[in-house]
Image (cartoon, rainbow, N blue to C red; front, top):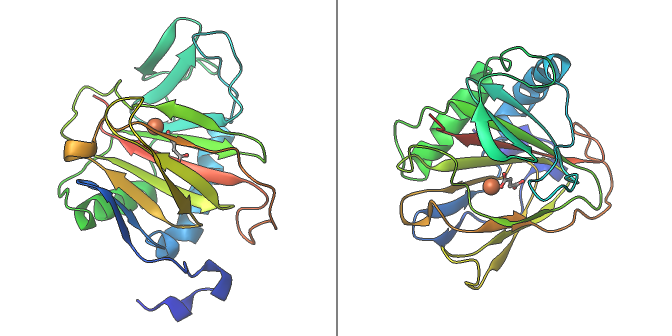
Length: 218
Ligand code: SIN
Ligand code: FE2
């Protein structure tokens, strides 16, 4: 597939990049999927609307979230966990759309992790000013599976560090359709997202950044 099939402003200007052993950014990898992802996401959020969760410290998160797949990531005053049930509806999370799962499996494979079958997809929506502080993804039982993280819409700066909170972090610009994958020796690396900057709305996604994070949580 060649890039000229896509709008010029969608073609990532940056090369694929290795961030650390087991961690890489696949530039524009989600472009062939963007229309299917966006349509399927509307079905997910109709069933399980975006909401601002509360941190264990009692703060409201600036990033709005929802989930699809067997397990959904949750935060509240009692801590972080995965649950099969959306506490807002009392029902199971929406099924993971096939477009989501196949993109995640193919991105993981390209990054060196064949056979990735995610059972959880966390959807994050950043409006300008929203940020995600440095953290590890460590509520998943199976740490052999990588994390696959798909960026849609406005550009953001991703922070990627080491296995200790105090390790030096690098700043990685992520654009629409870029996919970051980290696993193996990088699986527990700290990461976060700087406050989103105001920018011209994306023609498909609008004036926000949406991130899909795929995990094998069970
Ligand atoms: C996350 O760490 O859950 C999301 C990272 C991102 O939005 O790029
Ligand atoms: Fe994370």
